[in-house]
Image (cartoon, rainbow, N blue to C red; front, side, top):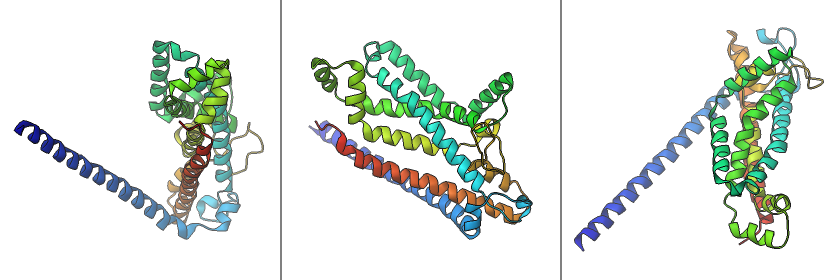
Length: 291
């Protein structure tokens, strides 16, 4: 009896200790986030203006003269939207195939998931270097299309694994009852699984968009940089992360302040994307089949 009481008391202390560790970790994350936001906003809000948002760089912009970063804003939006759309077109069928037709072969499914996890952990600069080597072999210059292809490869494993984890939580009985009614595996995947996991699918897409728009290493090799707005996908395009990098490298204080303004815009885009992830996920949850 005494041993049982000692065990329960020890478990109670362990639970309290872990609770304080979680509280401390959460507080540390919140403080870090606030410090990052305050630093960016403090240095960026003062330099943020309508001219920065609505105009492209003019002559002497990188020496502190007139112009803006519209080219980088639109380039980032084009790049992230194109890469996310391409990754979704490829990723959704792959995820459905993994959780329907491949589900019987546990070893193959485990191997595919392991490969996706490895691809997720590879740094983006490695993808950029790989894409750059392919571009040299094919004699292709840096362009928005090359950037979209490389960034889509970067976010594809993340998107597939995010959707896979959500679909993997669907009760097995739902598939068995659907197949017993004569529905095919493909129809079950698109008509039942997609509806059941719609909030998670939307979340995966928006999170992939947030990662795509903030990537800098891969686009440095593949997308290039230009002060003009891209007229088609075969032209180079500027992006916000590279604009921040180039402007922070300048010794002119005014140009550095503009870099923080660009960082503020990028942070706001990612923040809006995160809010949209929460709101859209909740609104789509009503379409899920309740147990």
